[in-house]
Length: 102
Image: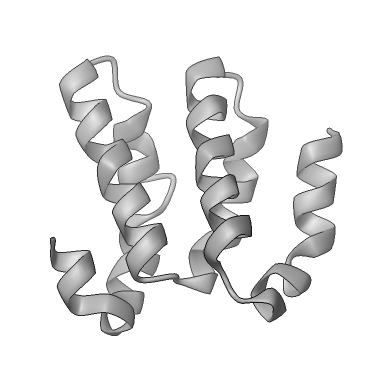
């Protein structure tokens, strides 16, 4: 809800919490309820805030050893490719291609 109301004004907040130490760690939690809430939060932030600085953090996690985390990261990547501006996608194109190919 905050992501929808705050929109792009929450970009700095989004950049701080979509990280390996915060929400991405939460999504990888053994507690299913906690993991799903973190997953929903990341989806809302990606769709509403569109923080371009979180893109490399998400792409880096695509090489995780955890298969369930990779599935969620793939979903985040799909949201990014579907809804972010073309110039943002072009900026990270090589990084995205490298992560997909590895």
